[in-house]
Image (cartoon, rainbow, N blue to C red; front, side, top):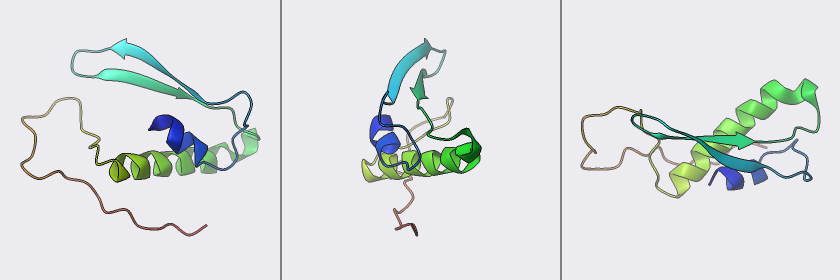
Length: 88
């Protein structure tokens, strides 16, 4: 899902491509790192924002909740934000 989000993000180099590492088995979660290669460093703030939006969109589309590391229990109904089309 992280790689799909990266593929939807404009302003990234196609080669080398994005990749994901499982960087840590923490106390309450697995920590993943998404590595990307921007086409321009000047565009990093917008690129990062777009990438984060795409990550949220892909996780929501796949019905995967992004939870805080420590929680009481799973909700009876998933708390997933509706996917709304973004303006280009």
